[in-house]
Length: 404
Image (cartoon, rainbow, N blue to C red; front, side):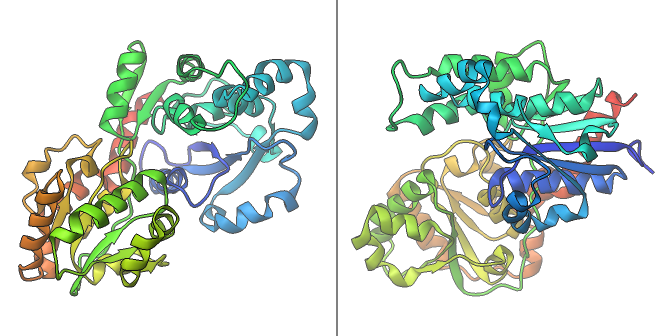
């Protein structure tokens, strides 16, 4: 029995799926349930008209999030008429026309209707994800402690997303969105951060608050039986596409005769950015796979040619969990309080020549067996910091003192 046996925990999160936030939420659900808590998940939509009682409008979301059916599921969303309320027009819609994502997201969450299942519940802990769902978390908490997962510095992400898009002048500034973000974060009892850089930034911005570095729980991937493939796993976003382009344009020509299997949707992004380059390496792109573990189970070497991006890289953690030898840039291991030079199965290189040399060296070595992968430095680091057991233990230590 733990301190959380039969305690009621509400997990408040954006109504998103197929993304990093959703994977973090699944880790939270698993941790709280394994601690004995009764879990209710509340998916918060920022789309007007997505009222919780409209089951048909949530059907597609539920179909993409079947894992949450193992919990009591509740929903929250603003009615359509919310956007014409004078204070919403003034404080959320009009700022949004100028690019203020902070105002519109928190503003619509403030107007959300909540499923009676959740609204009428009594909770011992509310675990909130992203500052802009805090209006819902506060209504559910009724004085219960709130843990808030920040999921990166959102004002920075909003500012980057707005680049190149039409917005009324004057454009919403980073400083104004950050002020709103910090204002909502101050209402939480403990602020949780997914990576070391994020933790350092918010500790400086909100020194009066209690902070905790809590790496997300990343499901394990197989450490064998092994195979002959050299693999690169990546999805389609701007940072990943830029990294793949650098690898194909600058690194690969320096490692002739070595073939790489590139898994994930990043191939579509490469094709959109440089069709001729994609065609040249068309045989390397394997597309999406249903089970990422199968990729690592049958590989001999994994590549992390990461040149940009913010926050903890989940794909880097997955590669570490595999126990495979890795060729990686230092940026691939960002956000970890781990000295990458201590990982003896990782070859670090930040320039094309160095990366290619490391690739040639490791490609020439025999593939590791399963026992070597299980005992590797990266697998040990994964078990200590990023496994489900590590997450559960740290979460319990953070939240237990808050219980009434």
